[in-house]
Length: 245
Image (cartoon, rainbow, N blue to C red; front, side, top):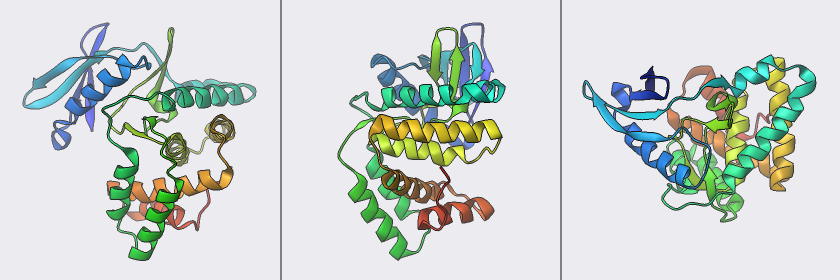
């Protein structure tokens, strides 16, 4: 959705691609909200326009992605990273701020636009209604290891375009769904650990986690996937494919 350019040692420019022009203004607003709440983000330094394209100036972060750290870590250390990630995500999810879109409303709309058969859409919307306990915290909703930068000062989260206010369990489910895009042995072990520790952090039962994953898969179909990716997401949404623990 964007290209990132180094400005100097302290700043980068995240410039919208033409087909997504304007989304950086929303992300800048979200970043201001979560930064004010004390969450670890690359702070915004304002909106600029370059050749008709909108962009946001951000702190330049020095460090590796958490994904690279996971890939470089000995297998004995993976579970510790997964536990740290689960606690980190819960810290974000239990932060409550005003001004973010409502995640449950967005998921309901996306399920309706998923292209799934009408009976399944009705089933999933009813499932979403049952799962929603009314809890509203910050959900990054794109929180995977490649969106966490490990700096000398700690972990920092980037790419806040999908952020919303919603149930923490929904954010964990989305993280687990995204994690299945990478099948390296270390990332598989990391994902299993995130699920195990995440369930403990949230006091969430396996069945509810699996149900939230079905909802997340159905909503993700609204993003326009085709071919094998779409078929896989449909199977997850139907419950025909249950993601392994």
